[in-house]
Each structure stands twice: as structure tokens, then as C-alpha cells.
Length: 608
Image 1 (cartoon, rainbow, N blue to C red):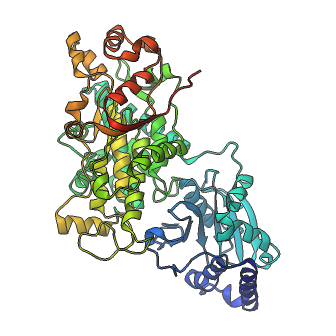
Image 2 (cartoon, rainbow, N blue to C red; image 1 turned 90 degrees about the vertical axis):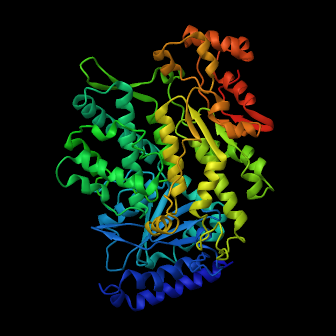
């Protein structure tokens, strides 16, 4: 590993060379590629980073990812460098410019890098042309009209590099980053007060889109009922978001959704794009045999135009290529706590769900808790096992909500398999049935296999079920390109994504179909949604049940339930006599559906 003295000497040489030929480097024809090659790459190499991947790691394991930039209008489609820890955790982005650009005052590069950093939920990111080096606090929401100085926490020029060398080394050298100095810097730098985090901001966007759609659909489609309106609104939002993310990941052509805004009926144009997506993705998200409502909807053009426009640069602060599924999930978790109600005059209003009111709000599950629970259940169970042995392991969340625990478990399995197949990050051999791509990522077929074999969930809210599926499918599609999808369609005649109808189910985890003995009417059945675990997951119970049950079940008082349900729970659950809270019933149900020696881990309310 490079030492501090050698790094100082190398950067000193770069500074001297830049100063000697300053005028020629400032000319417009000295481009960004040359700047990166001559100065920015050697600068970070001097700080100990494996910029050129001399260790020969597969792309998925590289310390520094170099992005190919694609110009779209005035926007750039990828940060130039992504610096990462082993295992792929992003630290910061670096955006490179040529020296003729005035980084100190130019609004666009600052907005660009802040948009990337904010969308990826990074604390800081950097813009440099070597002459200038600007560090930005990415916890503040970027606005296109912000001056270049907004959220800039440090600005130095090449003349300051040697004077500021201790700071540069201590903050950005690989050696010091691994020892935690970078974390200390961001804790002392980022102003967390009053910041609009990307998940909170995305929740506000989701809420406003739901309001626009609900208002228009309820007024223009008086023949559909409240449940159908909730379903139609949720499906429309999910489909738009899925396709917009696919665009920023280069799976769909950029700007594809904007085609719907060119002429005629914008919603019907959009529906045509959804139909095309069904041929390609097969995800259930675009299943128009199951969904007979969406195709006949009337939606005001201005509503579709507003939503689509707000998803694109520069109106959109989101950069979907770096916005993680986990961030989307945390926004959706809150979003699902509200529901559309229709007044007698068929006006829509949005209100909190009764069960959310009972529980005192939606409790967002922090990512580090999801990771801790997954590591200590799934992690312990698969440790030392082969992929063949792991394929038999069944993991379920009986109150899956937006899918945060299922995403956590799926990601853990993906990482485990990638490491298992890889030779310490070296590219796999090009065998026909190799589960790794040449870049070192899992193949689509392998990601689908793991998802369908291992991940299961149930939720009483049909919209939560759809969001869980959406999140898992987006996770499954990470790393795909338009070329890899075209290859699957042409070579294997296989659509890209699996359907998750057999894995993620809509129903009441605590109420079995023996509830019918109470002779409930149809209205009550729709509300209670009895669910048989054995019939819902027959293959799992042929093997004796689930190996892991994880999640964050609801907690609220049993006394708030209707008499029929209370009577049923009293007969059905042994813990009923000794508890006042519904989460205790989830513990009993978890043990009931668990294999011998299986593992249960839930977040619970305080036991005081």
C-alpha cells in the first residue's frame, strides 16, 4: 500500500506539471478524458486507490467504478467515478471536468454531482478538474437554480494541495478511509438539521402523484369503486416508476415515457407503453389478464403530463440509476399507510388507514436493523452451505409491507452467491452454465432462481403486496442492460423477470380459512381476507415449513378489533389470554409455520 510520503511526492509532481503548462491545460480543446488520464487518475492513485484495477478484479468487485458518460441534452447520465469499499458499499462519487470549466461558479456541474450523491443517499461527493477541487454536502436536496456555492463544504485549488495535504490524505486516502477517517469527516461536515432526505422527498412525490391520479380517476370513472380506484392508482404509479428506473439504468431508451405526452390521449398512450413492457418483462406488474381496470380508464392529460415531467431532469431531483431499491422501499413503507376514500359525490380524499391510526403511525424500519436481523438469521443458516443446499431454504415475512425485510434477505443471498462463485473477486471462467457474467455479477437466470426458491411474503394489503413485488423485481433487474435483455429474448425466448404470484401473497397471516365457520358475509371476507398457509405455499409445507421467519409485524391493541375477529383469535391462539397486543399472535403464528430448528426474528414493541 502506498505511504503518505510517496503520495505527497507524487501529488507535488502533478501540481508542478500543471502549473508549468497551465495555459495549455486551460484551452477548450484540452478535454475531460485527457484531464482524467493526465491528472485525476494519478491523483487518486497516489492516494492508494486501484484506479486501473491492477488487481484484476471483476467489475462487480472493483474499488473504483469508471462510468461511461452519456450526454442527454445538458444532463450527464453517470458519475465519472464511484469509490467503494470491498463488498460494493459506495463512499463517494467524483465528477470530472476539463480545466476550462469554472467549477467554482458553474451551476450545472454542482447540481449534477449533488443530484447523484443525494439520490444515492451519500453524505458527500466531489467535483474536480484538478485545477479546482470542490466537496459537496449531498444530504441537502439539490435545486436546479442553486448557486455553485450552495452545500459546498470545501473548495481548494491545485495551488493548495500541498498545504492541505494532511487533510486530503486523512480524508480521502484509501488507507485512512479503511480506518474510519472518512466517516469522521462526514459526521463533522454534513449539516443534518432540516435536510430533505431522498426517501422523505420521494414519499412527498408519491403522495402528490397519488392525489393527482385519485382526483382525476374518481371524477372521470364513476363506474369503478373505492378498492378498484386504489388498485388502479397504485398500479399506474408502480408501472411508471418501474419503467422510469429502467430508463436510467439503460434498460429502456431514455425519455421513453415522454413519448406518451406528444399527442392525443396521454393515458392511453402510456397504457400502450405498459402493454409493450408486458412482452418484455413478464413480471405480473403488467399483467392485463388479471388487471381489467387499467385499460378502460379516463385520466386527464394534464395529470399524466405533470407526473411524467416531474420524473425527468431538470424538474426531477432524482437520479434513478443510483437510487437504491432500499430507499424506494422506505418511501413506499410510509406511502402505504394511507388510502384513497371516495365521497358519495365520487370525489377522492386521502386519509390514514384505520390500522395505522391504531398503531400510532407507520414505523419505518431502519436499514441497519434489517441488515442485523438478516445477518443473524439467514446469515447463520446459510453459513458454510453450497448453493444447492441453500436452494432448499425458505424465508418468509408474514407482514411484508413494502418488502424491506424480503429485499434485505434477497440482497444477502445475492451477495453470498456472488462471493461463493467468484474466486476472491476474479472474473469467472466463461463456461456455458456459469452463474456469473464476465463482469463478476450473477446472471439473470441465477438471480431469478434465488428469488423464486428462497423468498416469500404475505400481507393483508394488496397494494403492499404489489410494492413488495415491485421492489424485488427491481432488485432482480439491477445490473441488467438493454443488450442483456435483448439477448435473453432472442436466445432463450425468455422474458426478463419472474412472476412472483406464487411467492408473495395477499391475505391475513393470522386468520385461516377455518374462519368461514363463522359464516361471514362477502363484505367481511373482503376485509378479513382469510389465508391458508398450507394452501398458499404447498411446496414449502411439503418440506415441513419455513426455515426463517423475519419482519416487523404490526403492533396495536387487540381490543380495537371487531368482536368476530377477537372471538376467533381467542379460540385459535394460546397466547391470546396473556396478551393485549396483536404482535404476540404473530410470534405464535411464526413458530407454527416454522420448521424444527428454524429461526424467528421480529422487531417487537417494548416489553416494559
